[in-house]
Image: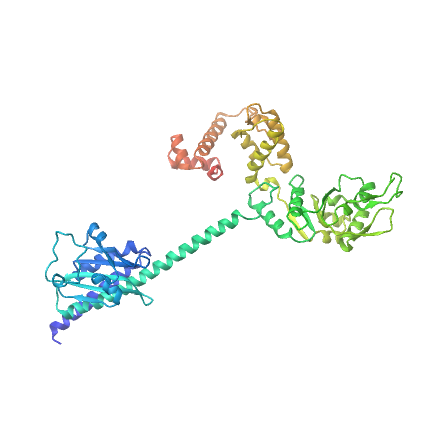
Length: 518
């Protein structure tokens, strides 16, 4: 080989390496083929002197090839670039899966020239090269280019290079398809999970969508199908009885009796008779035989509320029922078997009562098979408005009123209160407010004095000018954020402030914009 040929060969290899590097860099930029193929074709055209080039992909459903990206073609020409299998050079390359070199397209009958307009003649001395693009032994399209006519060996070198570029594009298409399939899989999975969340168990008799309550619902769902003894813990007024209802009516015993016993409401002298029944003449007022709550609940569920208030004597008898599922009526000797599920509840610290001897340790462990803790209302503030709306509608119907809404000042008072009486206290407050309302709206002044603030009752103590201005500024900031639903930029515009000043003022007064998102 002459020195001149060696030099040209070396330059060609350098050009090819540079071209392949630039194309690989472009293909790495995005998994979206539309974004990268156009630049790839442009690089090929500029570096190799191709005048026109096009990537056509096969639609397996229609068995038609369509140009997806092109270099040197107008939008109208790209639109006309459609071919059936076996039609023209492009269709033949896909059908035969073999590359094609045409020395002069102006003299070739198979070259259709479909991408050219009717008024544009096919130029002389123009060669056409077309290679198949294959993925996993399947031809998915073609890569074709037009260029000035060259010696056959040079065109052959171009075709080999074109085949390499076609393989690189095929890999890009493969990656894109995998990414698309993964996106579709994730979308489908996301839809499935959303449906699961939508259909996630929630008892019909309990209101609340907070994360704290969802944990309670999950526990109810898990324990309801079994016969396990349940101990419901929680502050007074949190809705322990509602949870007991939910457990029973979502269990196989739902069509059997649900018997409630408030252990704190019954005197010690009659609690045993209430639970286990008595025989005639067992005591002075026992004028006839009477069935106890355990007999009445046979086959169903007995709910022992305030279990921590039972006397030590009754605790011993209850322990026997839990262990042996049997008992005797007061004044009787007949042993009665019972098939009953026990759900107990308490707001007391039973662990502390065990240390003082007020509550039996063995009974505690018999009851505490499946504990469920009901969160206080202060830990589920996101449920507060749902509960308030429910009680407003409930007591509105009871009193013949239509409560249309709860005013913003009233909502702020409800949200800022600590609710020591939990849901029961909220229910009482809303019932009172409904009775006081005369315009279909619950206003702040309809709420009890314990919920009122200094601002709502105009009892703010006299203060300095600076303090008064700070209060006013805080109210303006809060109102703007509430109107804009927590959008800082929108609130700043409404107040005539820059976003920077808005941020400084919000930070100064410790206002959290997230509290105003809806």
